[in-house]
Image 1 (tube, rainbow, N blue to C red):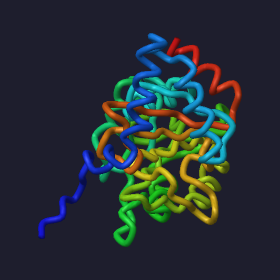
Image 2 (cartoon, helix red, strand yellow):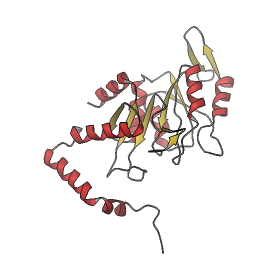
Image 3 (cartoon, rainbow, N blue to C red):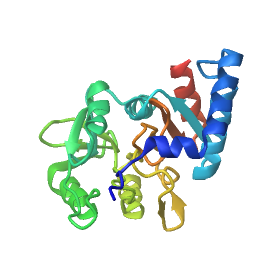
Length: 231
C-alpha cells in the first residue's frame, strides 16, 4: 500500500463543508481583500500563538519583507541569518537593500548555531560605542537584526539568541514558516522574537488554499506600521 507523503485532497474532504461554507460566505460578501474573515483569522492566530497582534499578508516572503521594513531595515544595514533555509529568508533581506550575513547551523538541529553566532560577532564584528551599534568589520554595515529559522518544525534555541540580541541592540525576527504550533520551553513559535513571519503555502503544516502569510508581534507600533504598509 502506497501512502502519499502529503494528501491535500484528503485534508480538504475532512473539513469540506466548513471550507465550502467559508468560501461561499466570502464570495457572497465580495470581501476579497482583507475584510472581516481576515480580521477574524488574525485575531485567532495571534491568540493561538500567544501574541497581541497578527497582520495578514500575501505569502511568507512578504511576511519577512514586511517585518524587515517595519524595522526600517534597508541599504547600509546587515541582517544575520543562515544559508540552510528556503531562499525566501535571504531574498526578503536582499529586497530591502540590506546585506545578508551568514552564520553556520547546529549539526544536530539544523537550526542556527548559538556558538557560531557568538563566534561571528566576537571575531568579525565590532561595537561602535559612539553610535551604539554593531558593525560587520568586512562589509562595514550596521547589523540591525537576526533571523533564526525554525526548521522542520523545531524551534531554534531562542533564549541565548534573545540574550545576544539584547546585548548588541539587535532585533530578532523569527522565520517560523515551518513551525506553526511548535514550542520552545512552553512558548509558541512566533511569540519570543520582536517579530515573526509565517507562511501558509499549501505544503506547510498550516496551509491555505493558495498563498498566504502573517507577521506576529507584541509591539503595537510595529503592528500599526505593517498594517498601514498593506493598506
